[in-house]
Image 1 (spheres, rainbow, N blue to C red):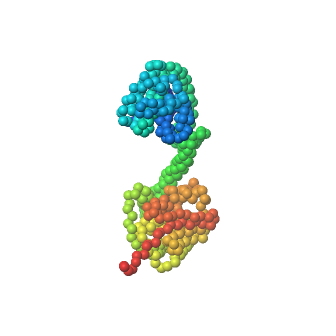
Image 2: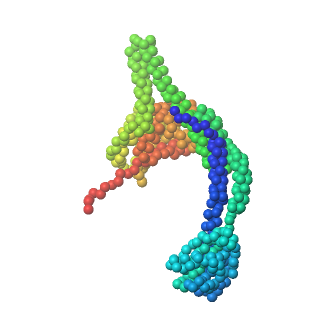
Image 3: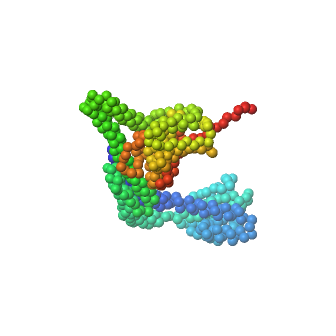
Length: 472
């Protein structure tokens, strides 16, 4: 059994917000205190290299002195250009603290560089006059000209101490603010989710009157609330259909069972010595048993189709012959109850490819449905159109179906009127079987209805692609 995590969403948000704040403060302490000296030296090296680049680029320029002086002042560096005999060719006008320019007694590094044969070298020296570190970049401009750019590295320990003191204060303030802000943010985010969770638990217990509300500016939470409201609506419909299904199946089972028992008792108690009456009773009992068998078979067929147990057996057959055979089975209704069946088709033969038995069941169930709901004229029409693909329509002249009810008529036992009545023919789950079969065939299907004018159920069978008679 899985253990439930004890931390609430509120606490988790609060915890991670604090961790994020501590991480940011850690970065500040690391870079502002521990690495400040290294970063300072990196910037200084970058400055002298930039000036060296300007010197190399502008050494033939007539305004060389002006350009280099400006670069020297801007970056607080000293510049000296000498020849191979150590004679000064150019010295920048900026002579800041720590400049080595003109101090021959400290010029050993110049001798080393000129005789090294290197094009560029960096030296870290101690300026004895000021007792501070100085960076020197030596660059060979040509075979007889060398540039030395140096800058002072001032001690920044006092600056680090100041920053450390500031960071202590900032850390204290940021942690307090993080506690407060994290508390309000976590409450803001978690409150609607907690509210939705409570409503979802009520929904799970079968309370369909709950409402999922969210007035936050967080899109995902609002979408979650909308999704759960939609789920609640669909679940309430499913629950209502489930109750109707149980009630209607119970009704359809109870009625024939009651009649079977009644006529069996009559045969035993009243008509034991009346063969004719007893035979009538037996015929009614057989008829009701047949209805029960049909109901059970339809439920089993629907269950198999929806669980994908059955595999379709595709074959080519004549659709016209199939429909004519099905209509012939209703001859008894034409003779005894004045039903009228019309079959309209454009040609004598239409060959289709599908599961013959299942398509026959579709047409049979749709005709049964039309018989149950057709108008007072008791007219049922089957029409086949081959203009594009093969369109099969079953038409009744009944009172039609409300627009709001159309999406649900394929559900088991769905009726716009809640009071269930026994079908003239069939079991009440024929449309569900039709839907399952057509979906399994991947055939398009649907229904069109007009109030007080009737309803058309239809499905479309793709035409068989014609094969070439001759091969190349």
